[in-house]
Length: 204
Image 1 (tube, rainbow, N blue to C red):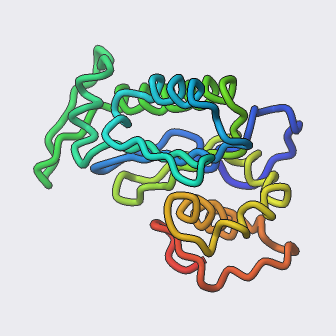
Image 2 (image 1 turned 135 degrees about the horizontal axis):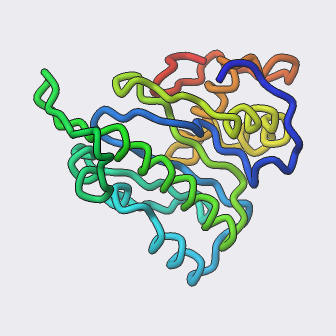
Image 3 (image 1 turned 90 degrees about the horizontal axis):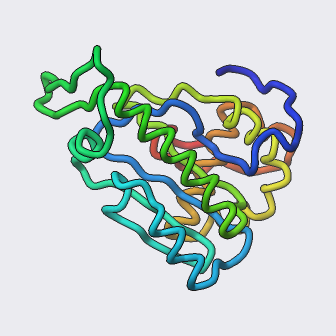
């Protein structure tokens, strides 16, 4: 989608930057920042519910930050994890990589959103982030993403605190702010982003 449509604050449970129909080339990852530190039992429930294709790497850092990711052969795992629509098939591209059928990728995207909503019930999610993969065709961004951009001013104190660090929290903060910059959502916030790097965006 393009533009920021006015939506009710309660339209979505928490910001999910990069929400929508994502395409993937070789791998995928999702970052989650919780509003507070999950308990041990909550962590176990959150990890147990991670979508199967994203269980190759499950990493906690800074107590409140979670990153889940696939390995480099995402499409093979997706093809085994989700059924294919009757009129579709997987394909081997000219690059020699298996590409799972669109219906399987759509199932993964739906699974990610279901998982995020589920874990929000376990421990409040402050924000989630999934980078766009230009080699996979990018993401057809949804209204959830658009609404998330309107929440940037509220999140800015947390993002600015994280952006100069290292690790997954900084990766997420930089990616969110790069997305916000592209959408014009940083205007008027007094944010200096000249040296901010995003995987898909270059300097923000």
